[in-house]
Image (cartoon, rainbow, N blue to C red; front, side):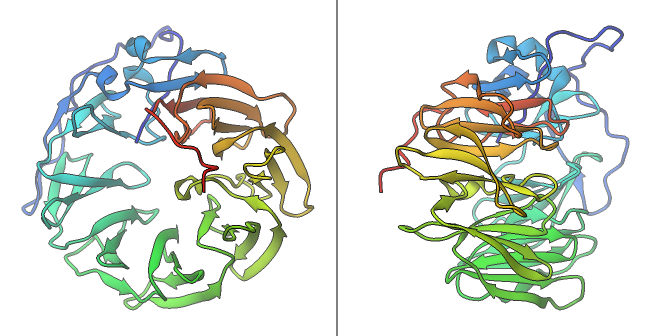
Length: 384
């Protein structure tokens, strides 16, 4: 995971950056323990990250580490994997990177407001709830993989072995409530504070209302295929049909309705990219046509009118709208990172090379900065 943004120079009148962790103002509750956070050199966190400033046209590299501490975009994703293991978070109060010292921490999931986190401990050590404001943690007394917080942070979606999902209420001591999905569930996502979407083998799509004590099945449908991309607001879905035919089907979720089908299209090249291929207004979706063919191209597809804006040609790996919808960032088979206006008014701009074919671009919340991770190696996505 990565967090990054940058700026050319320190704005006049801004206070100097402190590298000292903020002193907790809140005492631990009886069932909580102090959370140990120690300062980390930001250059150690952000090695191999390339950041592009859309306002100035400048690229900031790891050699410019002096600029990092002050202008990390906490809205992007304030955690990073440290070299040699461990996790670091960005503390907004002290404007510094801090190492999260939790022995046996396997996975960390953050709430949308970045004030809380959930950590799975190794050897079935259970789950811990982290409070980054109070600098405390407490054991939840349950076992499972933390998948996602609800948007308001009140519930935690868990993945449970061998293959199931459950919902845990965090405001009091309780046990997870199972979600009875069809087949073998593959992915689950929050649509809003009260609804969870689960996609399962067999191309089943279910939406559960979890606002009550017992989950209520609100939608039970079959979609085109297991790989799908959910819109940012959780109201629309693009599903990719299976090989060899491919094809993308677009759906509205409430009420459930198929909106369009695009033969021969794909939403991406790997499961993890299904994040922001929808524009913020849900009127356009990013698709790849003629995948691995001579005329492979990235287009912006109009949901209502079927229009296709040609954004770029070539071999693509990952692509994503900026939060404001003005830009599309993408990576290519040639391990380069590009930026192109979403209205196709300008040709794609090479902003970073050797970023890694499987690197997912990350945007700051204000859409000014986009970051690419430099990865070692890659793979040919066109080899069956």
